[in-house]
Structure formats: structure tokens, C-alpha cells
Length: 304
Ligand code: FAD
Image (cartoon, rainbow, N blue to C red; front, top):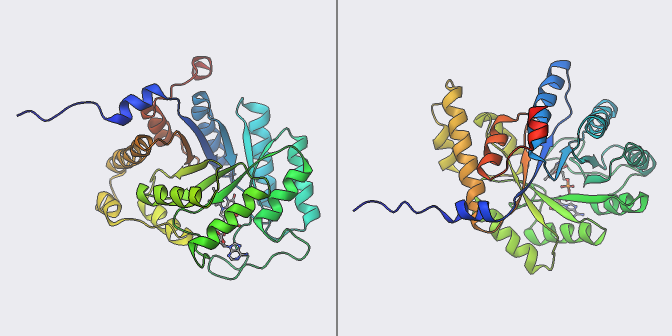
């Protein structure tokens, strides 16, 4: 008997229901990285993302790079930028100045984070004297400063500092009470973790969208190291898929595309319509996954 070749549910759902995507970039450190970033931005722009976000680091020069990248997105593209901002190493007045600077530059969306401890992940977090003590305080400060849309973080596998999931949900609820309207998750590979987390979030009475953060595996070793620092688990099946491909970038890319496609289409089957992609400033894999999700470039931009 022939196998059943009916199209999957995700196939028909993708066609029937619009999908929204957003892309995350990091500010480039060198002129060469800047070229790479803008190649990626230019390639992804015609897909008309809901917004594009730019990460933020502690310290003056990284802050300036974030600001410069966000300002260029405002001036050179049609996309809506979201600027990440943390509480780390700055007084309230300094952070308020950054927020005011974003408002003047035309930015209306901030991803508000507490940030990592200055001693590094695994050390205790100490708020800056005179700074915003928590992410919820920062959200409230941003909302006071202007009519910003504020997104925050969420952790399907719990934050590495989390004593238990209830504390995580309390922290998320406090951010929503302070005015956050969307959460973006830490990346994950096992969709069951995300789906179980959403059940807990809803049971806690939190109703804002919790957008899954998807990381295409551009480089398995790097991703696994990054995951170890963020508390995201790397399933053995994922390691197995990349096994033996260290010196075979072409096959690695095909596997990465297949893994990410499987993950997002499975989420579509569960009714997820919004996706946030950690692009690592590279467009190709993300572009391919978006294509699978049914997104097509706006022609005037694609031709430009
Ligand atoms: P919060 O959401 O405030 O807290 C995270 C967890 O810490 C809580 O869930 C809880 O488990 C614990 N916790 C916090 N407060 C308390 C408390 N009072 N008592 C007990 N437990 C508590 N980092 C950057 O430096 N720059 C970025 O641009 C950046 N962008 C990010 C974007 C996303 C979508 C995500 C998911 C993370 C990002 N990060 C970024 C990483 C983030 O800064 C770190 O994970 C940081 O350690 C926590 O910041 P947060 O806002 O997530 O913290």
C-alpha cells in the first residue's frame, strides 16, 4: 500500500492564516560586521516583519552602537525598530536619557530587560545604586517617559537565576502590570517546553502574547555554548543531527534549515502565528524559514 501523502495541517494553515515575524539583530563591532548586518537587513526587509529589534550591552560604546543601528533602521528602512534596553550599570537618569534619545530618533518600541549581572552569568545581580532595580521598574519608567510599546523577556525553561517557575511567572506578571504588552521567549528547541510554559502563563492569568524566540542553528557548537549560558536545553536528538558535520558547512546549513522548519511548522500546527527570529545578523536561513511559513517579499523592495 502506498504511504499517505496528504499535505500536513501546517501546510494548509500557513496558507489560510497570516504569519507575523520579527527579526533580532545585534549591533556590529567592526566595519566588516556592519556590512554583514546591513546585507542581512536589506535581504529580510522585503518580508515586511512586524518589527526588527536590536540588542543592547552594558557600557558606553555598545550603547552607542545600538543607538546608531536603531537610528539607521529608522532613517534607511521602512521597518519599525525595537531598541533593547537593560538596567545594568546606569542610573535612572542615564537610562531615561537613552529612552528620550530613542523617542527623538522616532523609536516607539523598547524591549525592556533587567540584564545580566555585571560579574557575569552565574553571579548575583546587584542593581546599580540609583538605577532601575528590576525589569518591571524599567518597564514602568519607559511607559512614564512616552507612549512606547514595551516588550519583555520570558523563559520557557526558567531563567538560570530562577528559584522556581512560580517566581518566574511572578516576575513576568509584574512586568505586565507595569505596562509590558508582549513577551519574547528565550530560544528553545523542544516545542513541548514552550507549549507547557504557555499553559502555565495563561493559568497565572497573564494574557499578553508570548512570542516564541527561534534560533536557527548557524553553528551547532556556538549555539550549544550560548544555550548553556542562558539555561536553554539542547536535546540529544539535535546534537545527533549535527554530529560529524563540523567540517561540512554545506550539509550543516541544510540540516539547520530542516531543523528550524520542523520546529516552526510544528508550532504553526499548535496555532502559533507570531515568531521572533534570532538572526545572528545572517539572513539566509531565516529567509528560507520565512518562505516556508508562507511569507513572500514585497516586490518593489525585493527589486530595489
Ligand atoms: P527578568 O525578567 O527581570 O528576570 C529574569 C529572571 O530572574 C526571573 O524570571 C526570575 O527567575 C529571576 N528574578 C528576577 N528578579 C527576581 C527577584 N526579585 N527575585 C527572585 N528572582 C528574580 N541581555 C542583554 O544584555 N541585552 C539584550 O539586548 C538582551 N536581549 C534579550 C532579549 C530576549 C528576548 C531575552 C529572552 C533575553 C535578552 N537578554 C539581553 C538577556 C537578559 O538580559 C538576561 O537573561 C538577564 O539575566 C535577565 O534579564 P530579564 O529582563 O530577562 O530579567
